[in-house]
Image 1 (cartoon, each protein chain N blue to C red):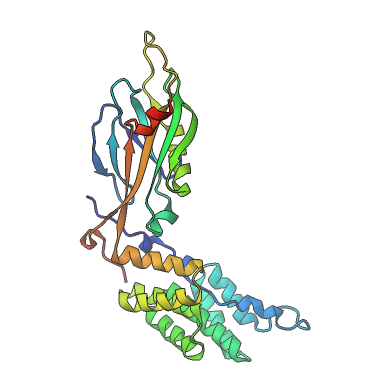
Image 2: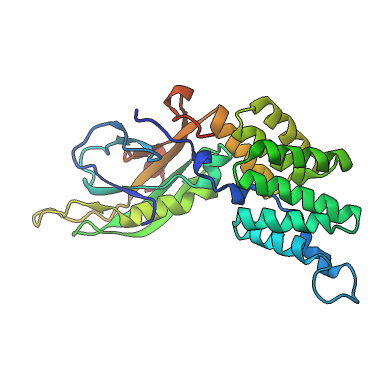
Length: 132
Length: 175
């Protein structure tokens, strides 16, 4: 997926990283006990138009996870702004979960993931000098 | 946090510039085939294609041959954009000033002048010109781009994405 960044999130608690220039700061909040554990979590790109207009939003995406850990039947359950829906859906489609052990039964319940798109102020001294 | 490069520094200047419609000249008279001022016309085309040097060269030639006030304003407006493209902001400003002296409703000149001021770090003047451009052409895309560049320069932000895998209350309600 273009402009997206791969993040291995299994077993990681809440964290915050500034990966590099222009990459988003990411915070991950793990699911409850008994939920499928993420293997690779793709981070959605912040829509440039929304960033420019200083628009923030939230999208909840629900989906099935098969035994192998692949997502399917991805749909938006709740959204505050349509601009964020496609990046969120695409991120979920490209993400994977840990495969289910053979002795565990596959749950019929959908998994849900909420994406919150925020814009954090950056202090001026963190910006590189303007080449004039 | 790592150093953050503002988005607006990477915004290609040509994408933010407004070019006056020199291309429309060919439609002024139905008895004329092609543009009435080819230098102005091809100068605008060169600028639109991102060739600042050729665009400015041709537009200067076209301006010498400008037959009417409209051509002169178009030429000066495009020179303002062209010199900004060449990062010669002071010269660009002087042409925008000339356009606005002749037509104070010329939103493209306000938008381009705002961009020149922005590149010179003159943010208060950028804001003033942007407000004028927005009042005349509130939906112009280029004006919105310059507005976002000003915001990025004065109030920069970095995307922060929270991925929350906890079940929300509504999830339980629906299952």
